[in-house]
Length: 142
Image (cartoon, rainbow, N blue to C red; front, side, top):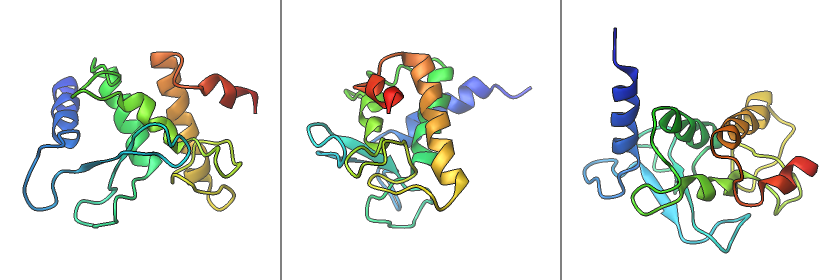
């Protein structure tokens, strides 16, 4: 049987390595200031390798990558000097009044079930794994 923990760990170390170099690398990008949480950095993963999407990540790619790594035993609150879990909270769109985790930072709901619901499901998985994430308690009361 395939060792899925090793697969998940290798994937995580490859995808989250900001020092990777080569065509289409690194795969992760970090922004110094978020949209919904401008006081902290944010990050993303391009959904398709080679898209050159101007650092526009998708929640349906970012959030489950954190869940998978966490389930494999990787502490994403302190990896490579970053708290990836806290940085992912920028996908919670409070700045535009949506008060939902959505596929895009600054995005709007109402156009597609997958992009509206799945980021929230992945967030709840992270919340179950890590407990308090930033001001996530506020998001449960909206």
